[in-house]
Length: 155
Image 1 (cartoon, rainbow, N blue to C red):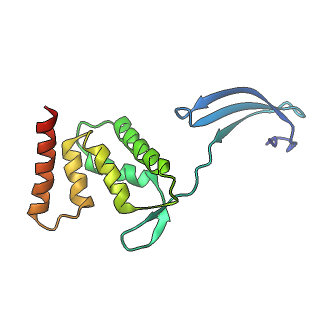
Image 2 (tube, one colour):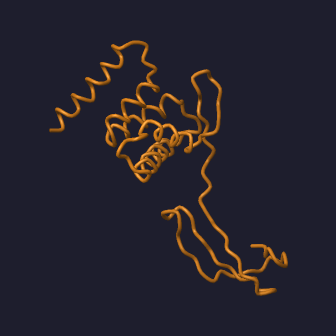
Image 3 (tube, rainbow, N blue to C red):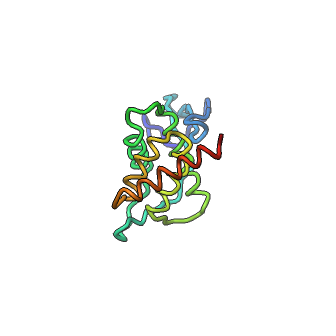
């Protein structure tokens, strides 16, 4: 690792510890040439993932975009930011487990819905109203019935 002070390529690791829930390693280093101490972070490089939008265009996967969507659906609901982060983590992990390089936005929406239904019913309905693009009240009512049936079966 190149020293940011003297630019020599000889440094030793003084301390290593996991951060970001084990997804990143923080390393304290010391330059063997000038003694300057600095910090580096190491993380697994994820393979690029493209999202195929409804119009056929492709864009890079953006977990923050999913987080913004579920946060909007959960606005003014008793849902914590930790719950939303965990939901997005589950969705991203599920996508990565599939081993694909491209995924449709519709498939991502299904994965979000599968997670959100277990977090908050109102947020689920709000998200569904946008994701499923209800054209009339019957589509909305069917989604309401599905969630009510789910509650009856879980009791």
